[in-house]
Structure formats: structure tokens, C-alpha cells
Length: 153
Image 1: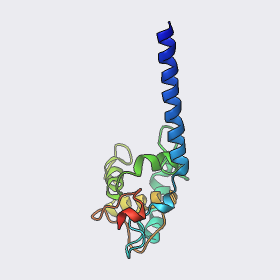
Image 2 (image 1 turned 90 degrees about the vertical axis):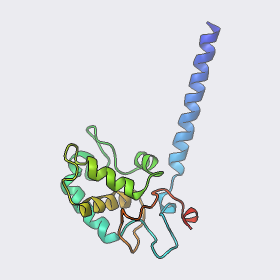
Image 3 (image 1 turned 30 degrees about the vertical axis):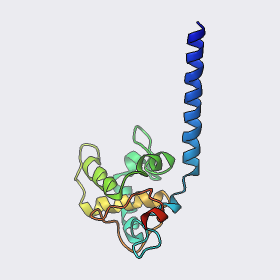
């Protein structure tokens, strides 16, 4: 009986520690400090014009499942906020474009043009606080979504 109580307490302690570390990491995450190649002539992950076009496309094709504010719902995951950032920060802009173009809308991948998928990806990044730069998002030049500016130089 003592062994079961000890194991139970240990599981709760590990789970509680993991929850604290996870929530602290998300709360401390600041996407404005993770803009790919900040400080270079190619600063930012996408252009403002591209993100604007992506917002219009998202409203017509994505909002019915992911919501107008990209907060998810009805079984669709949020496309902005801490959960999205936590899952996508180690990946690249190319990974995001490829995933969306292959899988979205569900069962109808590749139903938009590649440019439209790139624009939607730019809009999603913009909605997550990433600043625009002079160059549009280009899948041929992948940038790590959560890469700190100093690591990119």
C-alpha cells in the first residue's frame, strides 16, 4: 500500500512539474523576438501585402472551421496563440505552407493555388504577432518560425 501511495505522489509531482514548466514556457514566449533573420535585408517571414491577401483567403476558406480570429473550435485547432506557437516554433515556414497545402481544407488539399497557401501562411504568422518584412514568404527559402534573430546571423 505504501508503494502505491509513493508511486501516486511521484506521478502527481512529475505531472505538476511538467504543467508548470509548460505553462511558464508558453507565457514567456514572445514571437516578436523570433522573426527568422531579423536585422538583415530580408527581415521578417512574410510581406504585409501577402498577409493581407491571406486574411481575405482565410475569411473565405478557413474561418468556417478555424474561426474568424483563428481561435479554432468545433474540433478544429487554433491557428493563433500559445498552442499554435508551441507546436510550430521549431518548424519552418516551408513546413507550414506544405502542411496547409496538403491537408487543408480537410479532404481537399491542393484545392487552392500555391500562392494562396503561401498567403494564408503569412496571415497565420501575422496573427501570431510576427512582423512583416520587405520580402514575401517563399517556401524555397525556409525560415525557422521560432528562430531567435541572433541565432540566424
